[in-house]
Image 1 (cartoon, rainbow, N blue to C red):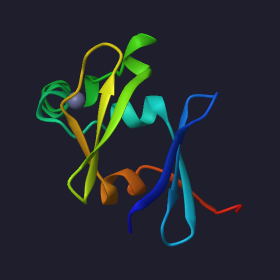
Image 2 (image 1 turned 90 degrees about the vertical axis):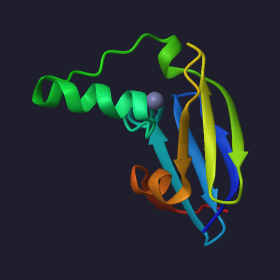
Image 3 (image 1 turned 135 degrees about the vertical axis):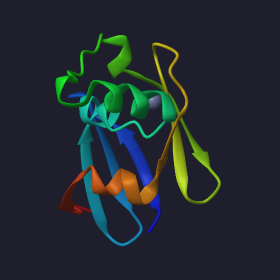
Image 4 (image 1 turned 180 degrees about the vertical axis):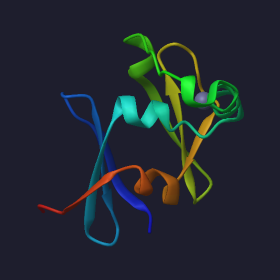
Length: 102
Ligand SMILES: [Zn+2]
């Protein structure tokens, strides 16, 4: 299960076309909230139930997406946060699956 095509849509979603004929979409706010890096994780854990994700528009805009090995993509956000490496499995689990259109 690997992405064949990744694109950003105008309504701030990351659209992934997978090699098993599935397309998935995830809102950038959701993507950022599920950032798997240690910094974001410890912030959320510390605050527990009180955690409220508050983002600026820069924190919700993607600067760059780069592949990491054969298992993940790394996302650089416009606010400079670039430590999140999204394994494909993780990426797909936080995305909404839809039947591929073409
Ligand atoms: Zn992070």
